[in-house]
Length: 255
Image 1 (tube, rainbow, N blue to C red):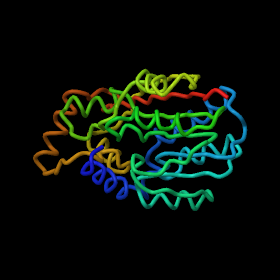
Image 2: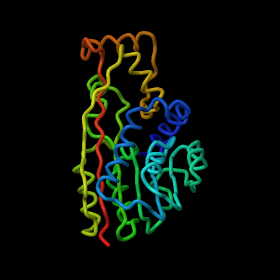
Image 3: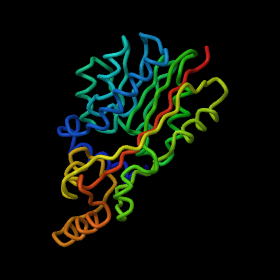
Image 4: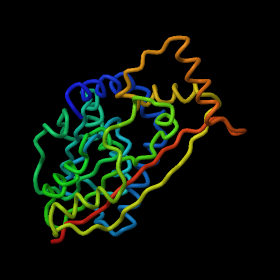
């Protein structure tokens, strides 16, 4: 994510901060699934140090507190508004682009969900997380794969996140970080949401801020053309589709 892109993403998510938590149902579902899967895989029930990258409005923060006992939590996000999440959960807050933020070291748990796709090279964050874990620590990071918003890509949208990648790419980043990391789980899913009209798709994207890289300026004619093209390509009796392609890696650092 270059400086211009980073600023654009920050503005987009800041505008949608108040609507994001209730509108981003898929991101909330992924956060709950990631926390549950971490628990199911035998991760410890309590952690004395936790670092979350891209906490946003707190979907994953809340899910982790539901499943685990957490102490000394540090939250990071690009949006200054996310300090509200830190205050809510009594956590320390480190604002800014994760590539420029001081990472805490020797963490027992490092997590992130629905964030790394906004980075040009998400593998770097995965590798940094591995290096920042304490021996025996756990890592759980999710992003989105190449089929994310496939419908918009088909229509030539500029909102495509730069760091879309499969779970194999995340696994390779961990392997490159050293043989101390044991990959416990790799997962991906393709899931279609259905909307009544293309306008409802755009409204969904606007409320969740996920069009953060788009430079599209809508006029009546461009909106009409977009809706016509979307309906022509993707209209079904169920409505029009929008594809989500979440991926994740869960790993443990050997003691």
